[in-house]
Length: 350
Image (tube, rainbow, N blue to C red; front, side, top):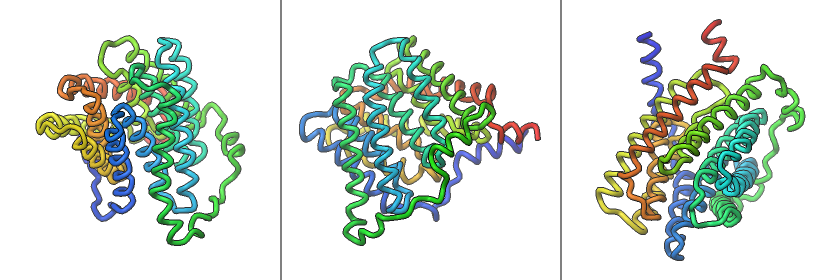
């Protein structure tokens, strides 16, 4: 028992400094922070949120890819997160009827992992975007406009990451596709009840419905935080769930504390918040595949800085954010225990 707890705790901080890469993350973070500042310059702070979502998520989708694959995965990421913002915005005011839609969206995003690691990532980012916009009915921006701004942020991020490649050698963008079976063949191969991706889709649908129902019935601010956290935490392989949950909770607490100290404590506002968004993006992008705790802290700073642009005091909602993260963690753990992946069951019983 003691050795298991040690692995879980140490697993939350597997920092490998030699594996960090900064060049492309700096580009991604500069675009996210720059678009936030541009929204302020035009006097439209509410537009900063969708622009940041589109540019950050599209950057996350393609940053680790070779140029020939990068533009494709970024294009798909931008398309799906834009559509998710539109659909989520439309469903944000329909009450409990939204639960049926979130179940379908979650199942589809979970099953997207059959297309490979890129499918898993795009599925997560799409579901996170849907959860955010389905839980924020009073943003002041219409659903179609939000989707358009998300798409605009995605296109600008694509341009920032791909134009230097074109200038250097346009042949690099003609990378060959992976030698994989067709999309239809991969989906059919996993379309069976005991398949891990099918189980993940079902598990994710149930968890998202429970999280969304709690959000709809609670009076906590920003009800999207619970289903959004569920979307971030859930993975097809449930064997590393304890580490991910602990990392998420620790990262949220750390990010909340940093936001309170830096933003509220120093009284940062206006373009200073845009800089905070950019720095948080840099931390999130650099550390997402290296140390999930630090990456979550960066994401938390981004969200709180963006909400501060709309006049929301961070300290007032900090307790509900931490509580929402804990609720989401419990939901994910229970869902994983009720319907674990095949590999996780083998690890326990094999």
